[in-house]
Image 1 (tube, rainbow, N blue to C red):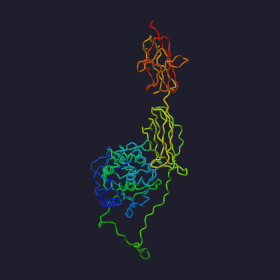
Image 2 (image 1 turned 180 degrees about the vertical axis):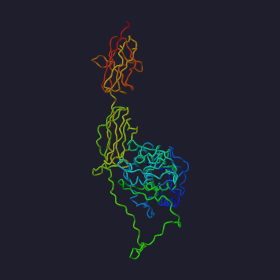
Image 3 (image 1 turned 135 degrees about the vertical axis):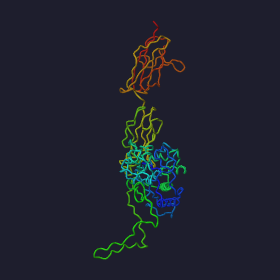
Image 4 (image 1 turned 90 degrees about the horizontal axis):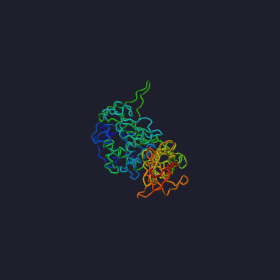
Length: 558
């Protein structure tokens, strides 16, 4: 998934032609202006954590097809470029979901970047033809690795192996890998696990798209600023022709796009990782120096007359436009339904056993897969998803189900809401109520057995210490109430005898807001005796109902 940085077209007729087409395309579509020519102004970011500003050290390929210029609001500006109009605007469902998920994730973690998903789509188109037209499995992983040319210094950069062949299968030199074409050393720094499968896989479009987005946002770039946008694209591949091509696709996708089924996307015809060693990667021969043999007539058949040469087409016969096979429109999600989510409840500091799950359906109730769903924690709570975020974007599987990451309860008790909604579509959200209850203990005991005594008007020399457990485990952070009660039959606070002291030094015979520490232990504040002698009771009760009663004796010295 990732960027093959510093790649450029081979120089020669191919570069010149593409540059001319890029300039013409951008001019006709009124896309941002670019500087033609060159393609030799930067360096491949082969291992640094932040894009490097050096000079290029080698060439590598990328797809040079430009978008059609059938701009609806600019009639008459089309030129004869590769592509088939509306079909080119189709983006495979999984690939489109990955781009939108990356946009949402970065908008949450780095809103100042202002990354549009269309930029990822433009780079994905140029780098791999949208993952070979969306040929990915249910998890978004390409059916076979997408590999760029060997970076051995022959026409391209010379980059020795950095991953022991783990990603590119080459233990001698590196190759760009995946639908977003990252070289392994750069993937080691920028790789992401966007689909929560526990692996950072450059051949997974979700992982690759998020990694590319984070790379483009490096150095605190604001991509809504033209200079930063150009810099980000050039950091991906330091070529002006590359910049022109990506910008043209960016503007094209901003004017409109639509979702098509996986595997039905239009493949590029120009050179690139899908055919890095093909003839389209090489410079075209100069006029007058062609070594191609001239066509010869068909040889005569034995016993017959020579076969006539094929007749050239009549000038009046117009060339037939290329045909695009019809595709079945992808179903559109119209609503989200609860996919069997149970009761959402956990004690403070604990994990929720249940996870929120929703299912996307169309207007007829049929499941719709590959839908980007956002889960958002709403309300006055410190509960978060695993990993520490309050927002998560998950793409549903082929069964239409999207399951949120596990919820981790904070210390704040009470109810809050988990809201599920479809990314970039106006579909009614689904709300789930979740509850965090206070920590509990089912047992509490005094840690010592020494008799607690004091003389009238003095303080008890020994502190009272208790330990709480729950189901045999240490009960951390459990709320505790300590009360000096009237009697074993009357648990109301006593009006005489031992007492705690309030902030002003006055007697206080009931304490709340106490909590056990990480070892489940609580040491009570100092206890003082008044002038009343006798045996008194201290009752300690935990959240969860566990209780222990401790005797306190006040007697004059012998």
